[in-house]
Image (cartoon, rainbow, N blue to C red; front, top):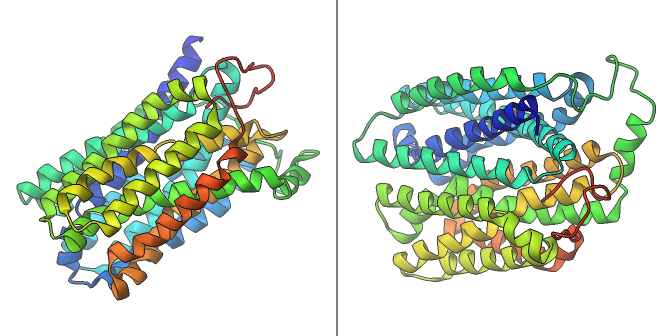
Length: 404
């Protein structure tokens, strides 16, 4: 690997680390944020709806923006929105303003939804260039960020450090990371349009064709289920443990940290098993593991047992994103369009699905609301063969777009 590509890969690791740090920073403080805003579970769902709206705008515009400008400016602007959102969420909490907090979550959703699709396309390009595994490790750095951010969140919760100062400090730290990483990203990756109105030959038809690929849609079904399993834990797990199992907020944040740690281990170790067993068996085992973990959290009355089951939930959900994106990238021609489509489906589930669970949680409790997530992961067990197979003997020449 040449030095420029090595720097680019390291920069992509930071681009994934930043949203991981950010999302876990505010997720671990959601009990404090809810209390300072003085809102109910349903009202908290409305606050989280800002995340849904922002993420939908980011997701739906990302593919077009990447095609027009390339991944670099899209990643840059989106990451800046994520950084800014931390300060806005903190300010909204300090002012006890639900609208301001909602606006901050809107910025976070727009940055997360728009930027992550672009980063995945850039990561798939690095895999194509190097012929080496990148995507699982990229997502591993996101999970690593959630572990570090959650640990800091637990510490801040334990010492009662104000939410606004915690999130503002996180914005400052991630801004330094961004300034370092942005310089290593090349121009024009993923760019398929020469101007604002005239796409290059074949670009627009390719975007249409991928919607008609049955296998790609099945892959989309897998990522939808597994991303919902991950996103619902990111948004609701601390409150699920506090309200559903009666633990205190600091312990609820600790359980979330265990989930994030399990995700990190699964993603960094996943390539070993995929190279030896293939993608489909690993995805099926992951979906079974996630389903078992969620079922215990929902139906067991023991807080200790639920806390242990969260580790299964995290291990099971860990490989959903990277493996399905790799499968999408080598499922046919026009890899960028395929990765963009499947990533869009995944981020819709990751960012939009969990706030909808808040409305169910208000009426039936968060534990009951998680049965919806359990149903989706059960479906993923059935759809797992759609991700195809890759083993240690697979040739990069025949599958150039991505490696699992």
